[in-house]
Length: 236
Image (cartoon, rainbow, N blue to C red; front, side, top):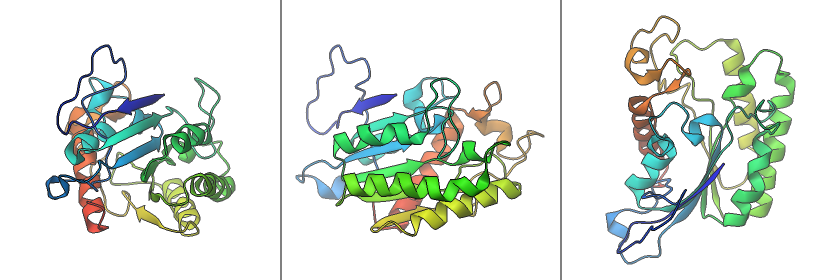
């Protein structure tokens, strides 16, 4: 699913726009200090978290929140259920299906959020690194001048298992081979610290348990953590 987002600098009319929203896509490269410069165009590529599953409306997902905060134009490509290896049950697609639309949008910055679904049992962990490397290389080839920001898996618990770390390490190994790319590690930074199954800590208030995804508060939390990391990387 692709949503085209329009920057809100100056006057914007959005009549009859079904997926064009009052949002910009952002890695934090444009702010009040850059008034007068052309708006940054970015793209988010990811799974159901990028899509916004679990939010009251998908435009309350983290990608849209970061976009609004950073005043960017953007394309958001969310493919629920997909991974670098895992094929989504709803449409038989992996994250690779979103690469062509992202390249076509010609963003200056791409944020890739993927890997959580590759933790699933039945996925061969040995395939994660080569598949991630293939996909990230395809993005780099199609967008030679873009900054690519790669997120490790976002895990809704502060107690990830061995498979989570294995996927995280595989994606990081792939990212390190991509020139002009950046790495963000939600697991190492403990973006979530509770126990999902026990509904303790932040998980008690930040999770939509009906769908086992972040709720509105959880997505706001993810957006704040991502914006902070982007500033640390000099991208905001």
